[in-house]
Length: 113
Image 1 (tube, rainbow, N blue to C red):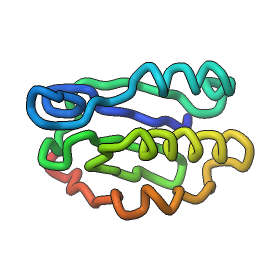
Image 2 (spheres, rainbow, N blue to C red; image 1 turned 90 degrees about the vertical axis):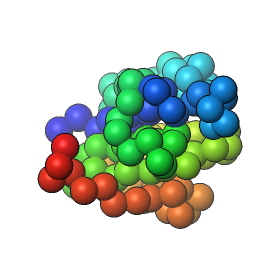
Image 3 (cartoon, rainbow, N blue to C red; image 1 turned 45 degrees about the horizontal axis):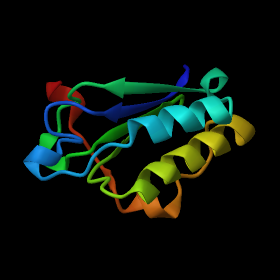
């Protein structure tokens, strides 16, 4: 399985007019290019991922499963996603999630998806 970071920038996520923080898409794309991450960790900027109540949602996919993150409201949260991708690129998909993101982890019931 390809390691992937899916960042929602859909109906609610990143919509400042709805009171949510902007998703720094250019920051993410620039980092993936700068660090050459695309060979080890795919970056996907997505439309709606579903759990809108968690606005500014990201999904990390590895061979170990899915990790859902929500309420990412600060640039430092997205910088931590970059940090995780760099760790995966150098250490493999068992890289630890940065502590800053642990509190943003949530479990999504995917049986209804």
